[in-house]
Structures are given as structure tokens and as C-alpha cells.
Length: 178
Image (tube, rainbow, N blue to C red; front, top):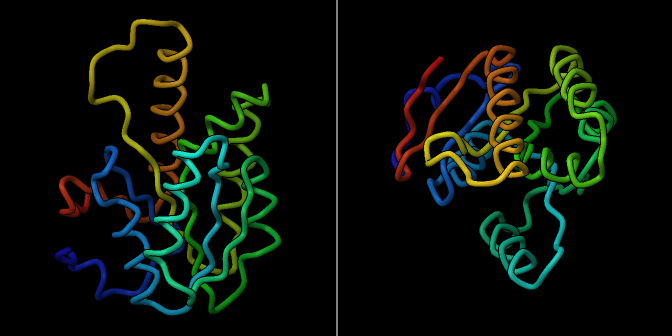
């Protein structure tokens, strides 16, 4: 994967990396962290079925053993507060799975997003957040899917506004938006 000029600069406090499914966004975000030093991987996915377990396994295999991993499907703000430390860049993968988990658990999404945004401004380490851009396709045909797409779009907008750098990855190619 070609690297953008942003990879030669120090990581800003908050970077958002977004793209579609299989766009290369996670691999790009991992490379950002690896270039700048040791990384802490905050995983939001839960292996609810065999296919998801296989996806998680492939991500772990690609990363190798140099990462410290924290699994946190719900309390993302709390995980960042307790794990972000100077000298250890943090990767959160991914916000859309976290949003899905919050919605499935019937948590207050607005409150959780507000907590995340508050924490992002206080971390002792740079953080790179990965998310899916789900609003580029057709409008879903059911209320639950439309509610999720709307919530994901609002989450992405809020995090992008708070971020110092925003990168959109398409077909493995990063495009720096901010």
C-alpha cells in the first residue's frame, strides 16, 4: 500500500481513518501506528459467529505479535482513559462495530459518543480511530438499517470534527481530507 505524506509527519493527537468495507482502512491505520512507534490496539469487535471469529483472527495475524491488544466492545471512552499512555500510540478498530454493539445493548448512543469526544481531547497518547463510511450506498430498506446508517454518519461527522487529521481510504489508497 502506498503511504501518504502524512505518514512522514508525527501523529497528531487524533486521526480518523474511514473507508468502505475491504477498502484497506485498517491496514493503513495499523501502518500509521507502526511507523510512529509501539502500538496499543483497542478492538471493539466481538466474535458472535464463526465468520466474525475468522475476521478477527485474520486481523490479529496481519498485525503480528508486536501489538498490545485490549478488547472493549462497549466502554470505549473508559478503555482509552485507562490505557492511553505517553509513548504508546493507540489504534481503535472500529467505531462502527462499537456503534453496533452500543445499539444492540440498548445503550444511550448520544451519551457514549459525547463521552468518547470528551476523552479524545485529554489523551496522553495519539489515537487513530478506524470507521466505516456506510452512507455511500443505497438507502437501506428497513428502519433498523436506516437508523444504523444515520447514527454511523453522525458519529463519523462528530469524530471527524474533533480529529486533527481525517483520511479516507479507497481501494487501498489514502486520501487526506483534513
